[in-house]
Length: 215
Ligand SMILES: [Zn+2]
Figure 1 (cartoon, rainbow, N blue to C red):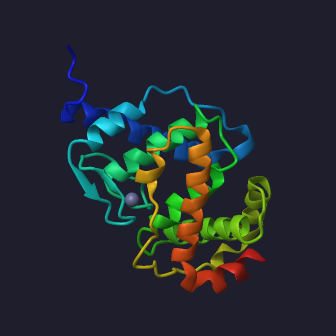
Figure 2 (figure 1 turned 120 degrees about the vertical axis):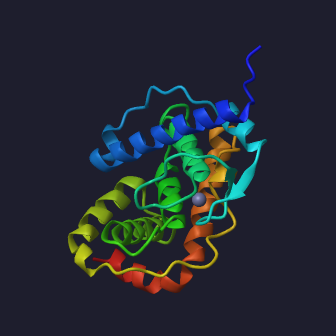
């Protein structure tokens, strides 16, 4: 019988998840949200959870307890490989099983600002853009399409964006909680709580982000 819970196999599957996350991220960057189609992928939550039963370590950025594996991570949204793999699993379900639900925008924004990386141009823009997304969604109640349009206008002034020192605490909810949700209803509720928690964690920069949100 195949030992599906072996660390090596789980790590291999997690690496595949990370690859999916890279592809999804690339697609997100290239395509408007309206023309992204569900991905044809073969990753399962079971393998993630199997790996999580092995050894977990806290992601140095968001604090999520994630599998202690070797593997890739994002170029500037820096995280532990295990955390990035969990995010890949989330995105796979988001685009596939959950068919790109309304909470998607909040999940992407929340994960991005929990992984601000280092002060370099792409990271600076990523953090500001995703904080603007959280601001408009949470404080203005904007729908995802409106938020994306507003961000498009704001990025025309990206030379105004500066590095925002990340908070010491990134909030109490992470991708490790999101990956445990079983239904779309649970995922939607968790995603909204996650986004609100992260937005509050960045409270010291709220005034600046509100100002940029009006550009
Ligand atoms: Zn993380």
